[in-house]
Length: 134
Ligand code: CO
Image (cartoon, rainbow, N blue to C red; front, side):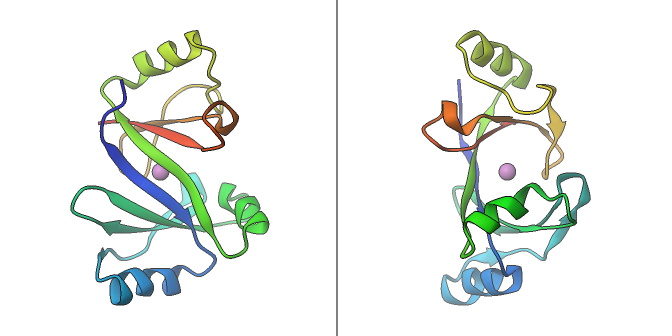
Protein backbone atom coordinates (compact mmCIF):
# COMPACT_ATOMS: atom_id res chain seq x y z
CA UNK A 1 0.00 0.00 0.00
CA UNK A 2 2.66 2.56 0.93
CA UNK A 3 4.79 3.91 -1.86
CA UNK A 4 7.77 6.23 -1.89
CA UNK A 5 9.34 7.77 1.18
CA UNK A 6 8.19 11.37 0.76
CA UNK A 7 10.26 12.85 3.58
CA UNK A 8 11.88 12.40 6.95
CA UNK A 9 11.06 15.21 9.38
CA UNK A 10 13.65 16.28 11.94
CA UNK A 11 12.73 18.62 14.79
CA UNK A 12 15.53 21.12 15.42
CA UNK A 13 16.11 23.63 18.22
CA UNK A 14 17.92 26.09 15.90
CA UNK A 15 16.52 26.21 12.38
CA UNK A 16 19.22 28.49 10.95
CA UNK A 17 22.02 26.35 12.34
CA UNK A 18 20.43 23.14 11.05
CA UNK A 19 19.81 24.64 7.59
CA UNK A 20 23.39 25.90 7.44
CA UNK A 21 24.70 22.47 8.42
CA UNK A 22 22.76 20.71 5.66
CA UNK A 23 23.78 23.39 3.14
CA UNK A 24 27.41 24.03 4.07
CA UNK A 25 28.60 20.78 5.64
CA UNK A 26 26.48 18.22 3.82
CA UNK A 27 26.26 20.14 0.54
CA UNK A 28 22.50 19.70 0.15
CA UNK A 29 20.03 21.91 -1.68
CA UNK A 30 18.27 23.81 1.10
CA UNK A 31 15.15 25.91 0.56
CA UNK A 32 14.32 29.10 2.49
CA UNK A 33 12.30 28.76 5.73
CA UNK A 34 8.55 28.62 5.30
CA UNK A 35 6.00 29.35 8.06
CA UNK A 36 3.14 26.86 8.31
CA UNK A 37 0.83 28.50 10.89
CA UNK A 38 -1.87 25.83 10.43
CA UNK A 39 0.62 23.19 11.56
CA UNK A 40 2.46 25.25 14.18
CA UNK A 41 5.83 24.86 12.48
CA UNK A 42 8.40 26.69 10.45
CA UNK A 43 9.84 24.30 7.86
CA UNK A 44 13.05 24.20 5.87
CA UNK A 45 12.93 21.71 3.02
CA UNK A 46 16.16 19.94 2.14
CA UNK A 47 15.92 18.40 -1.31
CA UNK A 48 17.79 15.17 -1.86
CA UNK A 49 17.88 13.25 -5.15
CA UNK A 50 15.51 10.54 -3.87
CA UNK A 51 13.54 12.20 -1.06
CA UNK A 52 13.32 15.26 1.19
CA UNK A 53 14.32 16.15 4.71
CA UNK A 54 12.04 18.56 6.54
CA UNK A 55 13.69 20.54 9.31
CA UNK A 56 10.90 21.49 11.72
CA UNK A 57 10.95 24.28 14.26
CA UNK A 58 8.06 25.33 16.55
CA UNK A 59 5.90 28.25 15.43
CA UNK A 60 3.58 29.64 18.12
CA UNK A 61 2.85 28.44 21.64
CA UNK A 62 0.60 25.53 20.67
CA UNK A 63 3.15 23.98 18.31
CA UNK A 64 3.09 20.16 18.28
CA UNK A 65 6.89 20.25 17.97
CA UNK A 66 7.47 22.08 21.25
CA UNK A 67 6.84 19.13 23.59
CA UNK A 68 9.03 16.94 21.38
CA UNK A 69 11.92 19.41 21.67
CA UNK A 70 11.37 19.67 25.43
CA UNK A 71 11.97 15.91 25.59
CA UNK A 72 14.72 15.97 22.95
CA UNK A 73 16.51 19.30 23.40
CA UNK A 74 19.17 18.54 20.80
CA UNK A 75 16.47 17.70 18.22
CA UNK A 76 15.68 14.36 16.64
CA UNK A 77 13.71 12.47 14.04
CA UNK A 78 10.06 13.46 14.47
CA UNK A 79 8.25 11.48 11.78
CA UNK A 80 8.57 9.69 8.46
CA UNK A 81 6.15 10.30 5.59
CA UNK A 82 5.08 7.64 3.12
CA UNK A 83 3.09 8.27 -0.03
CA UNK A 84 -0.22 6.54 -0.67
CA UNK A 85 -2.45 6.64 -3.73
CA UNK A 86 -5.78 7.10 -1.94
CA UNK A 87 -5.52 8.44 1.58
CA UNK A 88 -9.10 7.65 2.65
CA UNK A 89 -8.81 4.08 1.38
CA UNK A 90 -5.49 3.78 3.26
CA UNK A 91 -7.12 5.13 6.44
CA UNK A 92 -10.05 2.73 6.22
CA UNK A 93 -7.70 -0.20 5.61
CA UNK A 94 -5.50 0.74 8.59
CA UNK A 95 -8.48 1.27 10.89
CA UNK A 96 -9.82 -2.13 9.93
CA UNK A 97 -6.41 -3.57 10.90
CA UNK A 98 -6.59 -1.87 14.29
CA UNK A 99 -4.26 1.10 13.76
CA UNK A 100 -5.11 4.41 15.38
CA UNK A 101 -5.36 7.56 13.26
CA UNK A 102 -4.48 10.78 15.10
CA UNK A 103 -6.95 13.66 15.35
CA UNK A 104 -10.45 13.30 13.95
CA UNK A 105 -9.28 10.93 11.22
CA UNK A 106 -10.07 13.37 8.42
CA UNK A 107 -7.12 14.18 6.12
CA UNK A 108 -5.70 17.70 6.52
CA UNK A 109 -3.79 19.67 3.92
CA UNK A 110 -0.10 19.22 4.73
CA UNK A 111 3.00 21.30 4.11
CA UNK A 112 3.08 20.29 0.43
CA UNK A 113 -0.55 21.20 -0.25
CA UNK A 114 -1.65 17.55 -0.32
CA UNK A 115 -3.93 15.62 2.09
CA UNK A 116 -2.12 14.02 5.03
CA UNK A 117 -2.91 11.86 8.07
CA UNK A 118 -0.80 10.82 11.04
CA UNK A 119 -0.74 7.33 12.58
CA UNK A 120 -0.21 6.66 16.26
CA UNK A 121 3.49 5.99 16.99
CA UNK A 122 2.63 3.25 19.50
CA UNK A 123 1.10 1.24 16.66
CA UNK A 124 4.20 1.61 14.44
CA UNK A 125 7.25 0.62 16.46
CA UNK A 126 7.55 3.95 18.21
CA UNK A 127 7.60 6.02 15.03
CA UNK A 128 5.12 8.74 14.14
CA UNK A 129 4.03 7.98 10.56
CA UNK A 130 2.57 10.53 8.18
CA UNK A 131 0.70 9.39 5.09
CA UNK A 132 0.48 11.78 2.16
CA UNK A 133 -1.71 11.33 -0.88
CA UNK A 134 0.64 11.61 -3.85
CO1 CO B 1 5.75 15.69 7.39
